[in-house]
Image 1 (cartoon, rainbow, N blue to C red):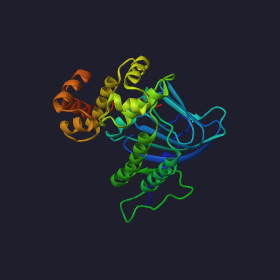
Image 2: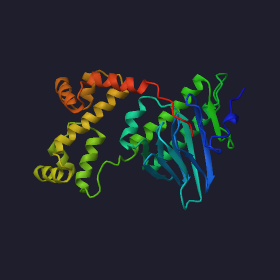
Image 3: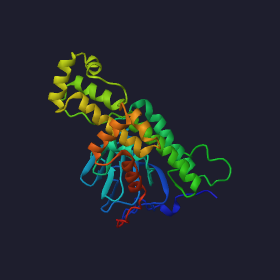
Image 4: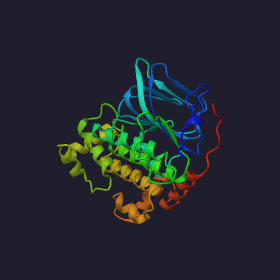
Amino acid sequence: MPVNADTLSGTAAPGDPYPPPGLVVVGHFDQPAGYAVQRPSGCDSWLFTWTTGGHGRLRQGGAEARAGAGDLVVLAPGVGHGYGVAPGAGHWRFWWAHCRTRPSWTPWLRPYGTGGMYVVSPVPGVLHGRVEAAFARMLADARWTGSGAPPGTASADDRVAVAYGGAARELALCSLEETVLLTTSAARIPAVASGVDERVARAQESMAADPGHPHTVRSLARGAALSPSRFAHLFTRQLGQPPMRALREARLSHAARLLESTDLSVERVAMASGFASPFHFNRVFRERHGIPPGAYRTGMRAANSAPKEDVQRA
């Protein structure tokens, strides 16, 4: 028997309830001006939105974002939020999904986060079609009952689906994981402060894009079309730290993401993050985080798997 969302017809009704956190719920709306949802206590699940037309405005705690086509905005649980058609916009067409996230998504989203809101933007236009296709596949897969083949596509008028079965939930989450990976890998991380010299910004981006590469002051200066001494002076003056110290921070951040999201050994994490030896990696990681890499991984996984406290529903 097909699974539908009839029992959740009030996901944006008066009182603005939300789906139970154990489910995966996905939908596609095109709402006119005036549409708005307010949840002062937030909800127990994560909310993902992918805008395909018009503009939406989303608020999470003290953070706020205006979403246009090609923007992924994610709201974490437990924080008051609201969203709707942006002022002055005629409509907001968007995909949305309520679910509990997989632990591996946290390090991908973290660089884009402020106050429980993650704004992944701008996502290159070449990826928009694939991301929308992933959401459409998620909508179709959510309806699979486990009998026969999953639906090929969702019907044109199919707006909301609930993944009740275990296999349907995992298939839907796989599509959402594809979306998170594509967008967070391709979007430009808003890490460069305004006013930073373009040549310094390029060096920063090179470090962030491939921290494990054997960067040197000379190679980074060459990419910036500057002499090594001039590059090092400009970088330090503008960012308050020398290039090699900034590179070490980029490598430590990359290593932390690998520890959280993979089962690679500490030695392989060190190698993949550009550290010359596991001993050196252990020392600088402890200096930065206060605990060794193995203990950091254990602590982060325990925190991610711990059940969240129930929050009062709006």
